[in-house]
Length: 128
Image (cartoon, rainbow, N blue to C red; front, side):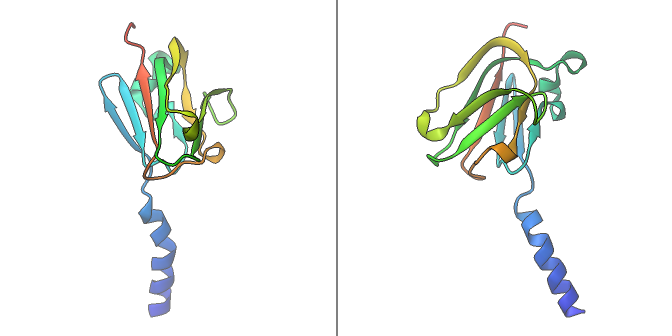
């Protein structure tokens, strides 16, 4: 019985260390932190847009202290067109979309991010 409890505890530990992406919405800004899985626009009403057609995006920016981190954001799904890709060592400038209606999906399998150090900022277009 003790062995069974120990095995179960060891199996559950990896799943409790990383509880999922942390998403904070403040006004027209979405901040994504503690990235350890895919993130999709449809999980956030502010990014879902009217009738699921996506949101008008002003810019997307990644910040990270690890110079080797890279991130891939696609449009609509993991198999959609890449709309944002950056490596943190190339600079931390935002990429502007000037109000284009997009459906941002962070493809975790096509990204290499530091769980505690990477942040993605999605700023919505101010003129709706």
